[in-house]
Length: 84
Image (cartoon, rainbow, N blue to C red; front, side, top):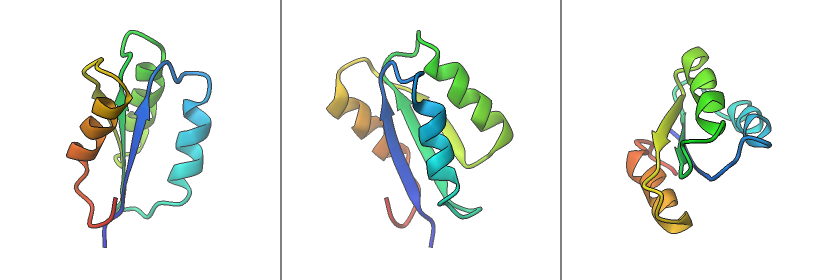
């Protein structure tokens, strides 16, 4: 069974690394973490892409800039796991 974690971010650079570290230690090697960033002009993108370069379970998506609900939906749409 594959697990997907959907994470919506907006100007999350202060805490995103801590969140990713906390999530990844709980995931198996075939699971995934989808991060949708609703403010891609900030530092969150660079941090998440740095993780993604080292760990294939992490995927970065640029949000549509249309608020928290649409941003979370963006992350959910990209999930491919059996359990989200």
